[in-house]
Structure formats: structure tokens, C-alpha cells
Image 1 (cartoon, rainbow, N blue to C red):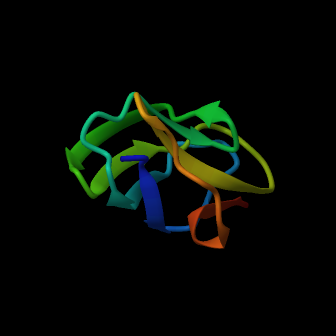
Image 2: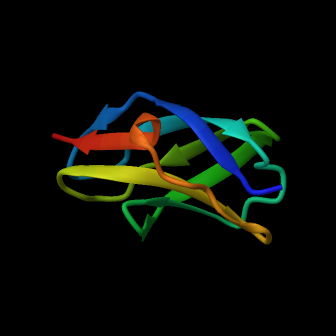
Image 3: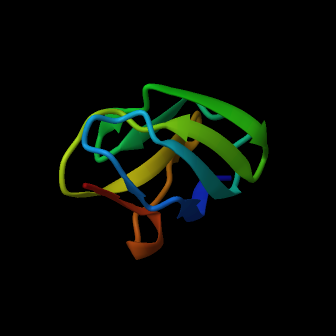
Length: 85
């Protein structure tokens, strides 16, 4: 099963990074990576198959948050977007 991101909270954080973001969805159990616009998260922890906590890396603009497992990377959509301010 491919991972799927259904939402993130909060969806806004500082350009300096370090925002604690909860990622909701499915297929996260064996996650090997979390990225913010292609940049690896500063850190992440899988709480359950449908929940990951991640620290945003530094960045700018609006980016997609994706989760990667051995089966692939989550498809992007507007519900996974994180806005740096």
C-alpha cells in the first residue's frame, strides 16, 4: 500500500524551520522519510499507521509534505501543503 497523506496540522510554519507538524493519513507504518517540498524533515517519528510527527526543515513558499515508504511516495494534493512564513 502506498502511503497517503490526508492532512497536516499546522499547515503554516516559520521559514527557519522547527515547526512540529502532525501528518495524518494511512500506510505510514514503515515510513523511511518525510519531505517538505523535497527537503527531508529535520526529524520525524511514526506514531501509528495513520499518524506521523515531523519537524519542518528551513524553507520558503508553499510546499507539499510527502511520506515515503518502501512501496513509494505519497501523491501530492492541496491537503498536504505547508506554507512557510
